Length: 123
Image (cartoon, rainbow, N blue to C red):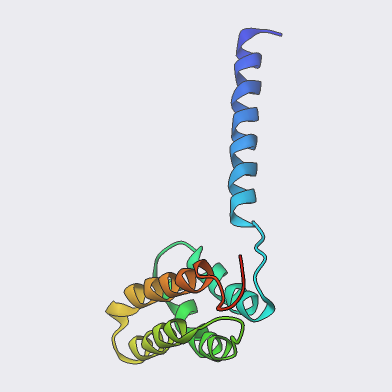
C-alpha cells in the first residue's frame, strides 16, 4: 500500500471512530424511573440541540409538556425541577433574552433530581 493511500485510510478510520464515539455519547441510555425518563425524553433533544433561536423555540414550544411531566414525577422530589420549568415558561412568554439561562436552569434542576438518591432507597 502506498504511503498516500495508507494515510488516507488512517485519517478515514480516525474520523469514523470519532464519529461513532460522539454518536454513542449522544445516544447513551439511562436507567431512570419511568416518570423521570418521560421528562428526560422531552428535555434531552432540546438540550443537546445546537444553541440558537431554533433550540429556544423548541424549549418554549415544549415548556408546557415539560411542566406537566415534571409535576407527574412521583419517584423523586421534583419540586426544584417543577419550579425551574415554571420559570422557563414565564421567560418564554415575555423575556426571550432570558430563555437560554432558564433552559440551563431546567437542565441543572434535572441533574439535581437524578443525582440525588430517592428517599428511603439505597442507590
